[in-house]
Length: 419
Image 1 (cartoon, helix red, strand yellow):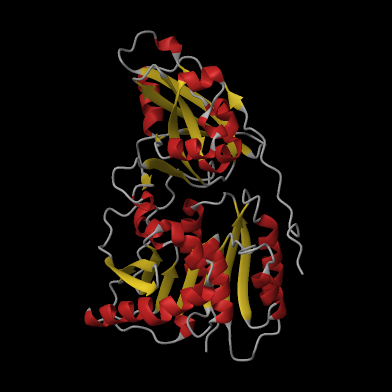
Image 2 (cartoon, rainbow, N blue to C red; image 1 turned 180 degrees about the horizontal axis):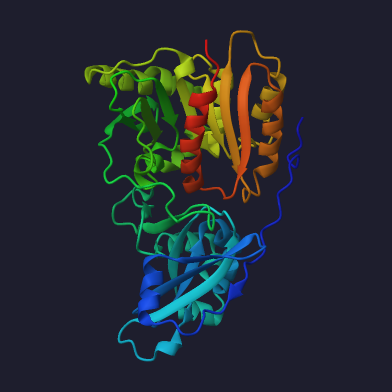
């Protein structure tokens, strides 16, 4: 029996270094930084300096820089991320400018935003981060940290009502190694076909379908946590393949995510009996040629979605022979790691079944890193499995996983076994 403490948790990253905002900024300088952040590469360092600016009209609150990957670890020390009033300007009317320069790891990928915390919380030490629910509510009020480029709106629909606040974040990719938007954001996204379907008693799936321009569909990407990748951190903003279909699926009720993705047999039956027949029928109605071989299907997901993807490609190769496994929650459901052990037992694979797996996990995936390192070792030894594993410079979030979906999809198309 596997012990619950089989895999250790990595150490929490230290608080990042702050640097006083340089003197001499003009309003024009601050407005420019508000539009696009300044990122300065530090010589002979694994850190870069990120500078953001923000104009506040509310003197009763203090803006806080939210760097998803890092601030999450330090949510009880939010004051460390506070922007400072930039007082050198004198009277600037209703706008009070704030700025902060903070060191972040070079190459970091993270969502970034501004949280406004009441000054009373800072004064009395009762920061929202000390209360998990208060921190979640605060996070839902995030504003963009800069105004240019792609802005992601997250939180409205998954909270179940359009009246709930929506967090708005900027994507920061590979900080210091390239521009903040290394991939051009599409001017428009094609309309997704959408439906709902009951797949089990009490579980209804929302399902979306992207059909490519080409008539012949060469492969189908099956994306768990579909609502996020279809609408909140949209895959199609950056990636619109010309001959690949994309099927997104997720429970209508977000609280059922674990019940669904944690049940590999339910995922399999949902795809086989509901999701894929709907997608195939619709594609053929639109004059497309739908693939029939499991080697042309790729299932993808992060966290519990990664668990589902790793399980599906192992247990149900008749549905998909390829997988993008991201930050897999292999501990599910009871820290017995049964799926990891199933892969270990399956190193000598049956002849004739050839799988391709793109596997990744985050440098700041501190709770899941070690079990994913072990999965990487197992996959590298498995017969009839073409695989690659990597550690990306990010954390447990959909922004990093979106990047991995794109790169993983292309890797599988170029490396999957033929025949």
